Image (cartoon, rainbow, N blue to C red):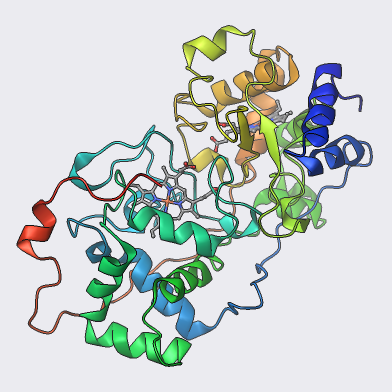
Length: 362
Ligand code: HEC
Ligand code: HEC
């Protein structure tokens, strides 16, 4: 497949400037295309092996609203893992009803990204997890020390940190982030109709979905959304090395103004955004970093025009959407964890939860 000239030029430029060195892989990768299923397990970094006790602790922290300034917002508030792993809002609402600037991406399969956030500013799940706790429009805690002071007041957390991490002072923000990241590495959704199809179950996809799969490749979507998670080569890249696309690449379309797509300048103010996963994409409307596009069909039209300079026919669009719907995997049964109790002592103090302000946005 030939890549559009402007895209190739962009990729070369980006590679030359060192912004997206791996982007050249795209040009090579598009020629010999290989449909791959989602792995059922995510690799863990050497210094944070996934263990059952750590995942359990991480799950409790992920669901615990007491880690927010007001005692009302947990990771799960915005990354609702009883459903799509996002919050279904254009942009998120944190403590005191504060609205953040960007759409919440899903945490399902985030373990397969080589960088985290729309602009890839966190190199790992561990680094990412520290941000929202002290982000002004998210959980709003004044400092990581204050977060850990809350954790330390819960006797069963003290015991669990000791058991999982050992050492002299296991109650650290680094360990809390490790536990949360270990839990997130279990949030994987294999066995979508697409996965079953590429593993040989030929009737797992409808005729329209197979057509959509071919169209998805033929029009050039796979030049960015390749690999098992449709997020480019990220699964094969070292942690921290990102894979970005310029969005919008073709800024001369009416969509840019209609959906305000250029207001957020993304990574390095260069309108670079991480190529996001398309796994479970039918579950995570609205779309794009600003959540401005309400439907999947419109998101597909916008992508074709802004990234490939193509107008899709109604049929092409419908076929691609049908294919994308086949990327909805098996979302594992998710039981709410039992959170450890306070033992007769408040951990969200009245004065504390009234304080406005707090740390800078992350
Ligand atoms: C108030 C809503 C809110 C809360 C609470 C919140 N997040 Fe997020 N999360 C977001 C938004 C919005 C983004 C995207 C921000 C950006 O890219 O600039 C994000 C990004 C992420 C990402 C990156 C995903 C990707 O594809 O790049 C992960 C992982 C994540 N959050 C995990 C967490 C964890 C763990 C917690 C709890 C410690 C948490 N979030 C708390 C809203 C929230
Ligand atoms: C040049 C690279 C590139 C190409 C080609 C491309 N995309 Fe994207 N895609 C991206 C980037 C980067 C984003 C994130 C944009 C943002 O900041 O919101 C994205 C976002 C998306 C989203 C929204 C994801 C979300 O979670 O909100 C969908 C859906 C999507 N792409 C589908 C497609 C389809 C279908 C095609 C082919 C018609 C395509 N893309 C072609 C780079 C690309």
